[in-house]
Image 1 (cartoon, rainbow, N blue to C red):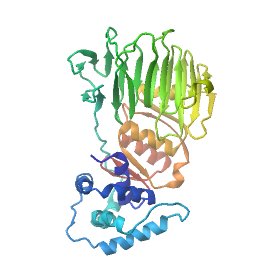
Image 2: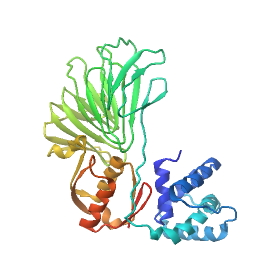
Image 3: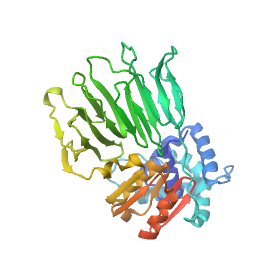
Amino acid sequence: MISEEIEKCITKYLFQSADVKDLDLLNDWIEDKENQILLKEYVKTNFAINLAMNDPNIEDFKKQLLKEIRKQKNPFLRYKFSIIKYVAIAIVFLTIGFWSQMHFNDLNSEKQVKPRTDVITLELENGDIQVISEDGSSKILRTNGKRIAKQKGSQLIYDQDNHETKISYNTLHIPNGKQFNIVLSDGTKVHLNSGSTLTYPVKFLNDSLRKVTLVGEAYFDVTHNEKNKFIVKAQELEVQVYGTQFNISNYPEDENTEVVLVKGSVSLMESNKNTESKEEFYLTPGFKGTFNKTNKQIIDEKVNISLYTSWMNGNIVFRDAPFEDIIRKLERSYNVIIINNNKKLAKETFNATIETKYETIDQVLNYFNKVYQIQYSIIENKVIIN
């Protein structure tokens, strides 16, 4: 299976927007012969290209590739470049590159984007993976046949009367383009947004911390329990909960982790510090706490809560948002790949309200095209902005 990161590199290459880092990543990946086969099949399927791979002119392509590398390479960066290393990429991409120059310019925004359809999965404590249907009704069983949870439509509910004596963890993976709800064994409700992962105990044991790990975005409605604290670990940030409702946005690619407090009380602290040196940063309802992943600083500000929780109702609201941030959220919400070749556009700010339940990605793109004159092309689930 080709990862999303490799997919982006392939598409960038085809549209002549790949930088040195993309080329280097592709080179390392393509050294595996199995990946070369995967790549050929992937391109045939997703780009409808009939590859003529029998007799590629390696020397011509190698010259072109080296020209691109020299043009983009910064002499102060210590990338490892080798002519021989890029021959593998040349073999696979030679015909594709010529084809893209001839035909990709014919693509236009009248074509419809075809979002991928990925599944929600639950990883059990023994490593087994179970597919979760969004509208299903099933039981979640352990290897010994004992039920630990049940599913009701878009909600997974863990048994509260589970008599576990040893802690074990499940991990729920929500792909881009989907949302899902879970009720933990203590009654805590969690609404997970697209592209998110939650790791949590099957059963919270008595007289112990209730600790979960989040990557992505989720809205928590935590059951109050004075004896057992509830903690959300979000990469380098820990959110200590005192019976409350709040939203956390913690995607790896974002510069900040954001916590918006709706009700109750939470404190923020850097998780990598020693216990003795940890300082709690308390939030007041209606405020957003922002943890900068680079300088490790935490600041807060008064915000309009609805801007940060509207995603649960199928809305995405942008107010003076940089276009690069908008792109990331659209990718997650619609499970598409968006490549922006207009670098000036990335930092420009926009206002928009998108109803993801009722508006397709095509309608959203058409909106940006008409209102802001943003030009784009479409190939399957990929949008290329020029």
